[in-house]
Image 1 (cartoon, rainbow over the protein chains, first blue to last red):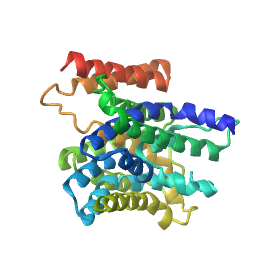
Image 2 (cartoon, one colour; image 1 turned 45 degrees about the horizontal axis):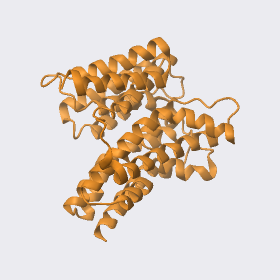
Image 3 (cartoon, each protein chain N blue to C red; image 1 turned 45 degrees about the vertical axis):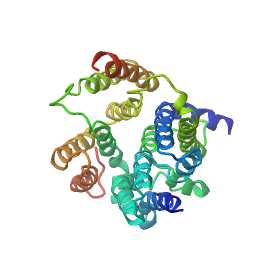
Length: 227
Length: 104
């Protein structure tokens, strides 16, 4: 048990930096709009979706209708559909832990779970669970810190959120170095960059996802192995 | 009260989106779904990198020089050291120096 926890803690460190910083940014912003730490805690525990929580601040401030809130959530979080799609096999035998693993499947947790290899003497179920759980802890801690003491922070944190970009870059590089499946990485880049140019930065994610699924389906060769 | 309802709606829809693939795809032995599970992570991680860098304007302002330097530093450190933490940490520091001091 202890070993699972320490290994998961180590594996989750890359997200720790990013989530605490982003969480603080979220807490500070929420507080500055007049919503106290209880809102930060509620949202980080039950919504737990980085960029959507920032948008939710806007929804709260403008007194959005519930229908509008629902549509915004669908548009912004639609990318999570593909995370589940690629985790169906991986989460198959997680038993009681599965609902939490599905609930907590954020961009960053997804990228860790995709990249991580369970150490030999660890129980895969618990190891994966603790990674997801620690990630949410960082996020909750960050947002509480932000809303409680954010205004006291005087260090300039501009650019610290680049840690998340860096994490994703490292994972892509690692996938590239440890596997021969380069064509799928290229496909992802080409389709999302094309969609970014065509649809613009606010609307390119959904077309990219659809494009990627269509592209991958066209490359599917039935039961044969894929190099 | 309305505010709590907004948070509730956002929470429920987010959870539904995350759970939907697991709810509709019960047949786990489907080779096509297995194939997607196998290859999607490669394409999706590439998409996430683009997603993080979507706000970069190559033609105006600093022409994305900070992001280019940041991504290059992260990549080079990883290629030489194969250490995830080191490359994220040093790469982020370099990026912060760029945006805060060099290319303000």
